[in-house]
Image (tube, rainbow, N blue to C red; front, side, top):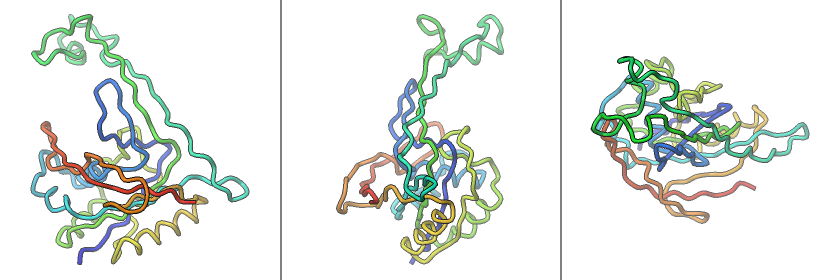
Amino acid sequence: MNPYLLLWLEAPLQAWGHDSKFGRRDSLDFPTKSGVLGLLCCARGAGGEERDWLAAWADLDMQLEAFVAKDAKGLPLPRQPLLRDFHMVGSGYDDNDPWQSLLIPKTSEGKKAVGGGTKMTYRYYLQDMAYAVALEAPAAQVDEVVAALKAPVWDVYLGRKNCVPTEFIFQGVHDGPEAALAVGRQLAEAKQRAGALRVSQGEHDGEVLTINDVPLQFGQDKRYRDRRVTVQKVE
């Protein structure tokens, strides 16, 4: 039986996209499996396709619980709305300067874009959320991943590089998902947070979603497959 890692994901901002286009970068209400495994790859200092490593994780379980802040009376505060951040990509550069020209978006053939290279983009972020993620791990890889989370090779972020974690991510190795999430609830209580929703892998009672978030290959040619999850609100 494989053990479960408990990952605590908490930050002022988080972003977990799964079907975003270039000009609009959305976020799900909860971390994706591709985002979590990408975080582990950063901690390991692993770039490239990582096909063999990802294959060992693809069919394993991932469950999580989401937590919101409490008010002074100990009651759950309403969830903050998605924060929209507006970006101008490629603006203000001199296309006659060889170095600055590299920062201006081009067509797929490397030519100047019609109407100029400056592009407007919108990026969305979750605000003031925390997640306890119970991630089933291949037994043979647990020691390597735990060591990487304790001393990451590369900086780790919660979705994007401006989403810096405010708590240690690794919170122990556990025998099963319930044991891991129970520790997560204790941590949430100590931080004055209340449960908001639970996401379980597979089809159960609740809202069933199909999300394309199981990574098969990273690198330039990223590839994913679908996963069914059930979202349940916590009263």
